[in-house]
Each structure stands twice: as C-alpha cells, then as structure tokens.
Length: 204
Ligand code: Z5A
Image 1: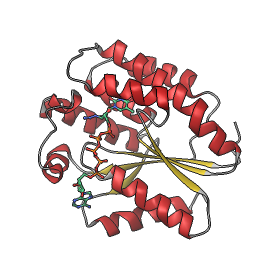
Image 2 (image 1 turned 90 degrees about the vertical axis):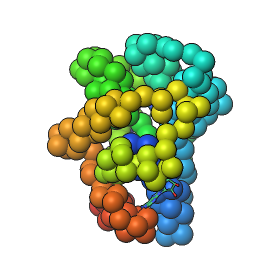
Image 3 (image 1 turned 60 degrees about the vertical axis):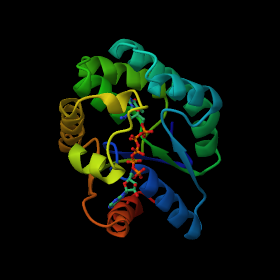
Image 4 (image 1 turned 180 degrees about the vertical axis):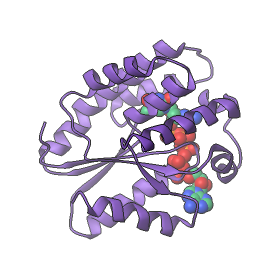
C-alpha cells in the first residue's frame, strides 16, 4: 500500500511518555498545516476498545497465544475502521503503540517465537507500510517512577520488573535492527518532543 498519508508509530515502556508525546506531535503537525490524527493500540475503534478492556482486565488470564490473537484482532479492526480511511484521505496518523509492542511484550516478554509473531503481524497489517516507528528510550524503573508506580488494576502492570526488563531489551534489539528509531526520552518533555520532531521531519 503506497499511503497517500503517513503512518507514524510511538513505542516505549510504561511511563516513557508516549501518550503525552503523541498528543504533542499531533498538535505540532496540525499547527504546521498538516492534517494529523491521534490514535492508539490496543483500541482506537469501538470493537478494538472493547478488546482493550478485556485485555487489561485482571479478572482474565489469557495465555501468550490468546493475547497475541486478541491484540491482532483489535489491530485489524482498528486499521480497517480508523487507520486505512485516514491514510487514504492523506492524513498523518500518529499511533500510540503498534506491532513492535507485540514483539516486545508477547515475544521478548512472554517468550513466544519472534519469527512467528512477525508473520502474524505481517498478515494482520497487510497492506500497510509504516513510515516511521520511534522508541522513546526510558528504562522501566524510571518509567514506573514517573507514573508513581505500577497500576495494580491493570493486568499487565502487575507483571514483575524482570518481565519489563525483557520487554525493554526487546525494544532495544529492534532499535539495533533498524526497525525502530531510538529517541532519548530521559530529559524534559520539550527536549524529547524536539528529538521526535527531528526524526519526523525526515519523512514529511
Ligand atoms: N500491549 C501488548 O502487550 N501487546 C501489544 O501488541 C500492544 C500493547 C499494542 C497497554 O498499553 C498495554 O498493552 C501495555 C502494553 C500492552 N502494557 N502494559 N503494561 P498503554 O499504552 O495503554 O499503557 P502504558 O504503556 O502503560 O501507557 P502509560 O503508562 O500511560 O505510559 P506512557 O503513555 O508512555 O506515558 P504518559 O502517560 O505520557 O506519561 C506517564 C507519566 O510520566 C505522566 O505522569 C507524565 O506527566 C510523566 N512524564 C512524561 N514525560 C516525562 C518527562 N520527559 N519527564 C518527566 N515525567 C514525564
């Protein structure tokens, strides 16, 4: 798919500042005269948001394969309902988390085979092309400190620091492979936003 629009992804561990940075980026792009929209995964569309609630609810305990397929189902619905139409109309879509989170959490974190996840991801997003995928680099301990600790009502945030360190290592491995562009997220929000804009300008 040769998008008339652009598809930009922001990844990071909990508390890296993704949500804040995605909102700041969309605001900056719109003030520069582009037409940019903000969305997120899991979620972003009505059915996908319902799946998000189920995925984060500590009542349930899906195994890694069940998680993989639920995130993928939410993703396909989100792409069909929100992302493809926006890209077709020439918009810049900024997405808070995407397929790299599946590799990091279900692959490096939960231990599913990375190449298998890559195949599922490729089939799920067909024919989308990602224009830029960034990773806000903050280690998990700092992310949780920024948030004032993990949210115990969130099924995933109940996981051990060991799990989040594996997730972080997975994101770093994707940066080394050139799949993700690393953004230093250790400074003030404005500094991180400047680093992000430098990367985004290259694809505009
Ligand atoms: N997941 C998965 O397993 N597989 C998948 O395929 C996908 C997702 C797509 C939900 O994600 C969960 O789904 C997530 C991965 C999994 N699991 N967990 N755990 P989410 O994106 O909804 O949840 P989150 O990652 O936990 O988001 P978050 O905690 O809101 O983090 P954030 O968006 O990166 O941060 P933020 O809300 O913008 O900022 C957090 C705090 O830090 C806030 O108080 C800010 O004011 C502060 N902050 C931000 N920037 C700074 C700087 N620069 N300095 C100081 N303080 C700052």
